Image (cartoon, rainbow, N blue to C red; front, side, top):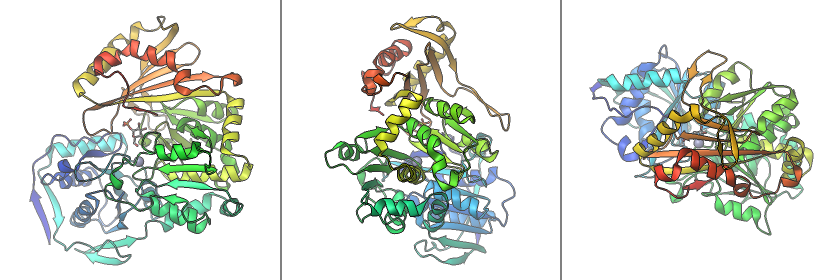
Length: 542
Ligand code: G1P
Ligand code: ZN
């Protein structure tokens, strides 16, 4: 039986950088999840009888919302849903399933790298038929629906057994529970030289992959240990847990410090990597060397031809604006296009669909390619492995040689988390107001060449996205960028991105924070970070 349930709008359901993210208790309010899911359906057209993919990163509340989404999909007229077994589908795997089976779209339940648990974060995002995050036009339409919603539709069905791979019927709709790993593993096998990787592991190459108790565990275990023959124990923390073992499933130098310490230690394996809550981010650490995500995208782009899936070269490279310019230098050398987009993977979708870019990356540990329409943590790890196998060199050799060839972009991001929203907005407003007066002035001996509020003009659909981050560009190519996070769930997070280009090889082994010290002070002088936030240091430095 289909029920129409009356409901009242919630005023806070505006999707952020990556879908709607809130604390679990917010999602547990009466009809909160239902309202948002119905608003997604209400903003879509033409899905009657079509297929919807549903999966999540396994975090707390995942299973409950999956049941609601199935019952609502049935009531709203979908013909079929494909659900990852156990409610599991990594974000890139969901993107692949949507594309492979040409489904109408998909609902992914995740708050990415944010912690999980009864008092932590949950999220819902919608991906369109191209496998990519809903474009802004659609998220705006969804938000508009959330403001006027008065009822939702749900089928009265018993909970579906999502733990068994099977196909059943519910309220006239087909429910197919799929193995979440197989399709994805096959895709990886089609892109990379698995024979070469098997040889690499056979020769004694040692690797550590930390799944951080998040969704990538089953994928990494299958691909690295079962298909590629890496020794048992290569994957660590590979069982997805609803609270990620009480940790932040965020593969950075703070939350994966144990991996960093191991990789810098005397008995370090050859290669270390980690992924986040929903499997789209990556952390790459070679023996004795951390690879910044901005460098990683540049290095992967420079070497991509070594992997079978990219042997014909790249169409172009795209990076988010705050990501360092290292990839630009590779694009120039390869003679391919380079695109600078706002933060958030959704902005790469058009470029990928139009065949203008092949590899994309963000400074926030996201790298990916046209194989799906999301960033893909394990993909980046496998491409690195393929490059290492093909070149027969260590990660450190590859990185230092890259810097010799292209110069080094020293890069760091300073985050001020959970700042009171009013104070963070005041900082940004003040900065915005003085942008026009900055060019030509000097701070800490650094001359400001230009300052602007980044606006993106999508070359494919002609749309414009404004206020995507404030850039202060110095003479000589250094810069600082300021923006507020669009994924936080409490207060505001101020992100300050700092970059200096260093062509001189004799200056390539400086400590990053030291190499950027004058720019870091300049950023505070320009934006009054300390006085506005009341903090004397960032909460997280990556
Ligand atoms: C953050 C990252 C951004 C990434 C997003 C989703 O967004 O900065 O690059 O696409 O998470 O993983 P932010 O919180 O900065 O809006
Ligand atoms: Zn993620």
